[in-house]
Image 1 (cartoon, rainbow, N blue to C red):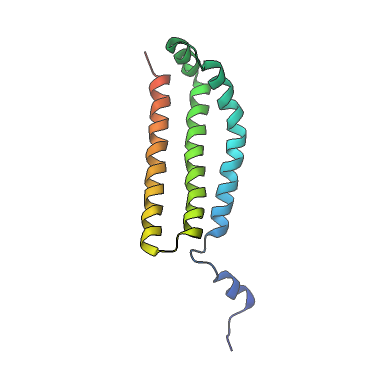
Image 2: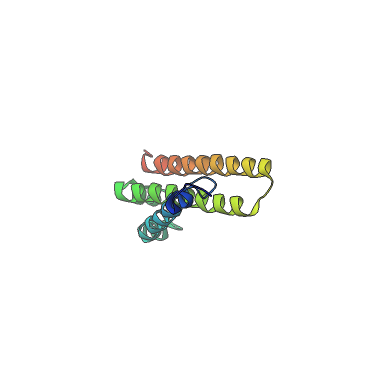
Length: 126
Protein backbone atom coordinates (compact mmCIF):
# COMPACT_ATOMS: atom_id res chain seq x y z
CA UNK A 1 0.00 0.00 0.00
CA UNK A 2 1.34 3.39 -0.93
CA UNK A 3 1.19 6.57 1.12
CA UNK A 4 0.92 8.81 -1.96
CA UNK A 5 -2.23 10.78 -2.62
CA UNK A 6 -3.99 10.47 -5.96
CA UNK A 7 -2.69 13.87 -6.99
CA UNK A 8 0.90 12.91 -6.17
CA UNK A 9 0.58 9.75 -8.29
CA UNK A 10 -0.81 11.75 -11.22
CA UNK A 11 1.88 14.44 -11.01
CA UNK A 12 4.56 11.76 -11.17
CA UNK A 13 3.38 10.48 -14.55
CA UNK A 14 5.09 11.39 -17.79
CA UNK A 15 8.60 10.91 -19.04
CA UNK A 16 9.72 14.54 -18.93
CA UNK A 17 6.88 16.02 -16.86
CA UNK A 18 6.60 18.84 -19.37
CA UNK A 19 3.87 17.62 -21.71
CA UNK A 20 1.42 20.37 -20.82
CA UNK A 21 4.02 23.08 -21.34
CA UNK A 22 4.95 21.60 -24.72
CA UNK A 23 1.28 21.40 -25.74
CA UNK A 24 0.65 25.03 -24.77
CA UNK A 25 3.82 26.21 -26.50
CA UNK A 26 2.77 24.45 -29.69
CA UNK A 27 -0.73 25.95 -29.54
CA UNK A 28 0.62 29.47 -28.89
CA UNK A 29 3.05 29.19 -31.78
CA UNK A 30 0.17 28.04 -34.00
CA UNK A 31 -1.92 31.03 -32.95
CA UNK A 32 0.98 33.39 -33.59
CA UNK A 33 1.42 31.84 -37.04
CA UNK A 34 -2.29 32.31 -37.78
CA UNK A 35 -1.96 36.00 -36.93
CA UNK A 36 1.37 36.56 -38.68
CA UNK A 37 0.64 34.56 -41.86
CA UNK A 38 -1.65 37.12 -43.57
CA UNK A 39 0.63 39.95 -42.48
CA UNK A 40 3.57 38.09 -44.04
CA UNK A 41 1.94 36.79 -47.23
CA UNK A 42 0.35 40.05 -48.39
CA UNK A 43 3.66 41.95 -48.80
CA UNK A 44 5.28 38.72 -50.01
CA UNK A 45 2.66 38.31 -52.74
CA UNK A 46 3.06 41.95 -53.72
CA UNK A 47 6.86 41.55 -53.94
CA UNK A 48 6.69 38.27 -55.85
CA UNK A 49 8.04 38.71 -59.37
CA UNK A 50 9.05 42.33 -58.85
CA UNK A 51 12.55 43.62 -59.57
CA UNK A 52 15.06 43.51 -56.71
CA UNK A 53 14.83 47.26 -56.04
CA UNK A 54 11.06 47.08 -55.47
CA UNK A 55 11.40 44.05 -53.17
CA UNK A 56 14.00 45.90 -51.10
CA UNK A 57 11.68 48.93 -50.96
CA UNK A 58 8.82 46.77 -49.67
CA UNK A 59 10.93 45.10 -46.99
CA UNK A 60 12.76 48.26 -45.97
CA UNK A 61 9.56 49.24 -44.20
CA UNK A 62 10.17 48.22 -40.57
CA UNK A 63 6.72 46.65 -40.13
CA UNK A 64 7.18 44.31 -43.12
CA UNK A 65 10.70 43.34 -42.08
CA UNK A 66 9.73 42.66 -38.45
CA UNK A 67 6.66 40.64 -39.46
CA UNK A 68 8.72 38.61 -41.96
CA UNK A 69 11.41 37.83 -39.38
CA UNK A 70 8.85 37.00 -36.66
CA UNK A 71 6.87 34.78 -39.03
CA UNK A 72 9.92 32.84 -40.18
CA UNK A 73 11.21 32.37 -36.63
CA UNK A 74 7.75 31.18 -35.50
CA UNK A 75 7.60 28.75 -38.44
CA UNK A 76 10.89 27.12 -37.51
CA UNK A 77 10.01 27.02 -33.80
CA UNK A 78 6.64 25.41 -34.56
CA UNK A 79 8.33 22.97 -36.94
CA UNK A 80 10.78 21.95 -34.21
CA UNK A 81 7.98 21.35 -31.71
CA UNK A 82 6.03 19.21 -34.16
CA UNK A 83 9.03 17.15 -35.24
CA UNK A 84 10.00 16.62 -31.61
CA UNK A 85 6.59 15.06 -30.91
CA UNK A 86 6.83 12.81 -33.97
CA UNK A 87 10.35 11.67 -33.07
CA UNK A 88 9.47 11.03 -29.42
CA UNK A 89 6.35 9.06 -30.39
CA UNK A 90 7.68 6.94 -33.25
CA UNK A 91 11.44 6.49 -32.82
CA UNK A 92 12.06 3.85 -30.18
CA UNK A 93 15.84 3.41 -30.32
CA UNK A 94 17.21 5.73 -27.60
CA UNK A 95 20.45 6.66 -29.40
CA UNK A 96 18.69 7.38 -32.69
CA UNK A 97 15.97 9.36 -30.90
CA UNK A 98 18.51 11.50 -29.07
CA UNK A 99 20.52 12.07 -32.24
CA UNK A 100 17.44 13.08 -34.23
CA UNK A 101 16.23 15.42 -31.49
CA UNK A 102 19.61 17.15 -31.40
CA UNK A 103 19.67 17.35 -35.21
CA UNK A 104 16.15 18.84 -35.36
CA UNK A 105 16.87 21.36 -32.61
CA UNK A 106 20.16 22.53 -34.12
CA UNK A 107 18.75 22.45 -37.66
CA UNK A 108 15.72 24.55 -36.81
CA UNK A 109 17.92 26.97 -34.88
CA UNK A 110 20.27 27.30 -37.85
CA UNK A 111 17.39 27.77 -40.32
CA UNK A 112 15.76 30.35 -38.05
CA UNK A 113 18.95 32.38 -37.79
CA UNK A 114 19.53 32.10 -41.55
CA UNK A 115 15.97 33.33 -42.23
CA UNK A 116 16.29 36.24 -39.80
CA UNK A 117 19.69 37.13 -41.27
CA UNK A 118 18.26 37.05 -44.80
CA UNK A 119 15.42 39.38 -43.86
CA UNK A 120 17.89 41.70 -42.12
CA UNK A 121 20.14 41.73 -45.21
CA UNK A 122 17.19 42.77 -47.38
CA UNK A 123 15.85 45.29 -44.85
CA UNK A 124 19.24 46.96 -44.36
CA UNK A 125 20.33 46.82 -48.01
CA UNK A 126 21.77 50.09 -49.22
